[in-house]
Image 1: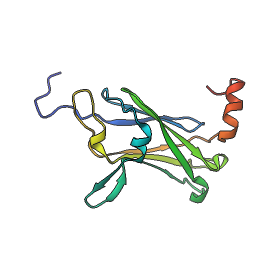
Image 2: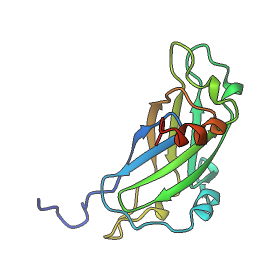
Image 3: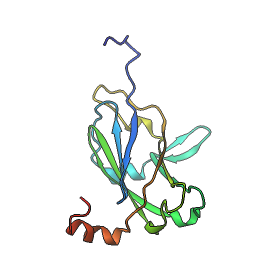
Image 4: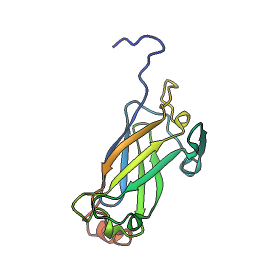
Length: 154
């Protein structure tokens, strides 16, 4: 398909899936240049007019119906960033409280530092927020290695 110069497709992320061990997979609409230093990426910030200083990638969890937001505390790591996708691993303080009510809790990821995310042609993301995605119930991280050992989770 021909695209006029200056109108190249802008690469876009998509929150493809979230599993019950806290791994959120984000796919890209175009092949991206992999980012090697994931700790630096997680700690990077950008100053934006009207928004102040924001993290390069902001990861938020919002409580569903009848869930106490204070029960959804978590830390996260960016565990991989390849050409086709990145994986963010969430570690909930109270994993057994995630999405246990009628309406599930939700994950939102915002890419504020658009200039850090570059495809093979040098085209960057535009500042983008990934729509909310429902979180499945979570397995406490202390139990994950046991479940992996017996083949229940990959």
